Length: 626
Image (tube, rainbow, N blue to C red; front, side, top):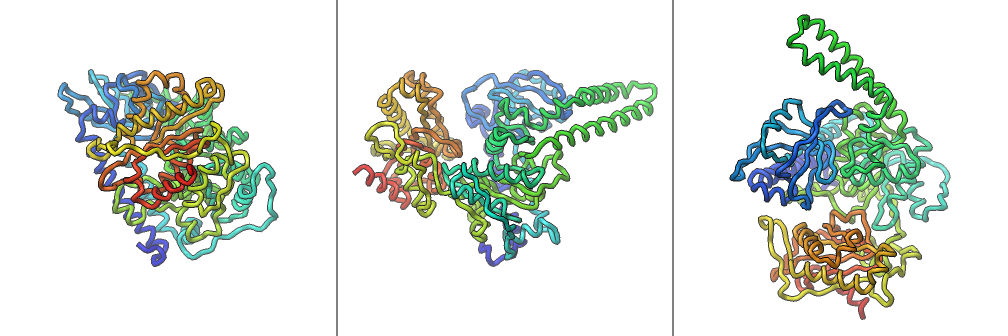
């Protein structure tokens, strides 16, 4: 689909059709994954806990009835439960047959092996308590799609308002406008960071901060937000994931900015928990009175059937409801009045507590990982949008190949960067990698524009060590398919990766690693390989003392992170030269740019070098070793 032949509305209608394709694909895939698999297979996939313990139940600060759930087995298995996701409870017989209870619930809080789940009514708990051995599993999330469909429909229909103007600027021929004022100096920033902050302040409509790996995108974005708050009373800061929202929120809190976090962080820590709307609401001086009024309302409802004067009881209930609503509004306005930054995920920006609120400026972090439709949910609340991210790193997750071919994985940030390049400022000084690790991704992805800060240019751990190596695997190191052929594992390569890690640790020395807190990352694009690597490390007593220094995860799990030493297990090894989604080079850009001082890539050269990127990378590494 050639976008330049379409009007903005036609292009957005095309995207909306692609989004519906993705919705149907994901819905079907979820049904296959959850409904047709056995319980223990679902547990291993991280979409189910079985069996579970039912804990305390109570009304939370937002008057939602919640119950605490804990998993009793398979505690080492990674799971996908997080705040806001819908879930279903089920009972299972001795043969593993599942019967779902006839209500859906929502995850309110996640802490390791413990969930707090919002139930529709108190009666649901009574039904749940009748099951001797219950389980819980993720349910297909219709909410985020509904919000995206609504946002797309609204922007397509928009005329003669700010949303319509932004639509025309982003996708049409309308030129973005700027203010005029003198360049502001920020001596603590480098030149490209300083320029980016100035361009954000100058923009009337849109600005893009393009932050390649290690270039201080978060530092720049925090500065831009801080400076914007000298000119505006409040801004909205969003990102695609809870983790990204938490990260930018924490940095703003450290800068002394009052932040109000909408939606609980996925991994709640004490620092961010105290800034969530729920906690601020609960800690408000008027909350005890509101709680008592709500309790009185519930008591009156329970007495309504047996009341001798039902009309009088209903009148009293309605009066108390009015008083509760008045208190809720007052508490909410006080909380929002104290905040300078409102932070949330893109979908959580549709939260009812933000209904009717408008912001002069919206900042979207990690914008290159967000579907365009999700961005429009938040853009509807703003007059100006600042995108920050890197479209050369991880793209949005899209499962439908037809939708990908149609362009659903092209982000709004990417489209604006292509069509309105004057809006883009690229950060070009990186503070993470040894220059020899940086040089190849700089040449391939960033037109050789990246330069190393002097303090990292020659950084290393061992004397006379080569910062980047390709470790060749043997011919009999072959990949295997797992999880109904949708996952890949290479056990021999995993064992080589672990022995490579052990040898490098021995070369550095235990005392130095612990004293200097040198850390290590094992990355594989495939979850099955990650799980196997973790099991190998867990069984080997040698690594026990280094447990806190070693992280094993997928490429996606390492997005935004860095380690002193990175080992990448590519997994793919076959006669056909098939490498699957390793063809998505943005994923490999993330993997190879996580390393600060040492990068080791383990892979089958014959399979991988059939593709130009991997062939050039292999040649580049060989040139360093000559």
